[in-house]
Image (cartoon, rainbow over the protein chains, first blue to last red):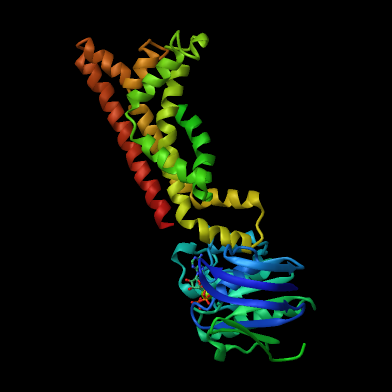
Length: 199
Length: 198
Ligand SMILES: Nc1ncnc2c1ncn2[C@@H]1O[C@H](COP(=O)(O)OP(=O)(O)OP(=O)(O)O)[C@@H](O)[C@H]1O
Ligand SMILES: [Mg+2]
């Protein structure tokens, strides 16, 4: 659960938007959309307290794991990265296989393709997350079939515990099959919430 | 020896300069880079003045011992190593830290992992520092003298043999030094390349 009160994002005089009162409620899957530069990534950085141009109050319960729009993969191989977030060998192999990437386990991260990078990052994030998971365009470079499997993995993670919160930014909404509970829209320097499904 | 001491000090220094963005680091980064251009003889003069009989540390009577050579060399090598480590950290800082926080990594883990991220740059920097240390003669002779088995190093030995007119010996020593330097240079380039491609 993350609550926002009178949040305003203002980057050196460039006003982005403000949020009077909003709560990312426990158990919900929330989609965050908006055109380029509307402040989606910035809002996510606010949620982990890593955005300097913000005023207001954020109260959160539970541990937040956040995957940036451009994930940084650690030296040196995919295996090293997955190990760092506590995955067992079997989990690594199964996870990659499901994502059509069983051949990258021992590849150096420098040589990975964009989609392969995102697959590595996603497995790493999911296995690390326990309460709240924030994903910034996690499938933007994946092919269609991988995108569909990835959504299933994320959904699975969300179902494992009743009060888990998922917030995801995405542009290709038509590819999504995840039954979000709410959609946040950033548009014209404002913040809108659309209820989609009841919890 | 002096390279080892320098590397041990330069490592946290370089990482800190790369990792933190504030008034202090903004002041020290160009300072360390400027210090690499310092003629080594100046380091010699400074150490000489410190440890000469009238100097602040004169009471230690360290002048013309191996200790002062090490101190002078650290002064020369430290900025070289430091100023090669922080530029490796700086460009990845934002993205690296954001990801580490995002993955809830502990502070100790963040620093340990960062070391792995820039390990090749650290190696290259240390080799470059070592190359500089063994090539140095002016500062070393000034503070250490050129005492057999005590403060005589490769370069000061070459100077001595040349002065004695023993050119063959000087040349032989010179050749050895060239070979060591070349090996170091190749190692440095190799390490640097591994670092940038991996
Ligand atoms: N640290 C910063 N300094 C200056 N401007 C910034 C900073 N961070 C973000 N901005 C600006 O804030 C605006 C919103 O950026 P943000 O990355 O949040 O957009 P976004 O909605 O995620 O866009 P995209 O869909 O392209 O990812 C942009 O105009 C960007 O230039
Ligand atoms: Mg963005």
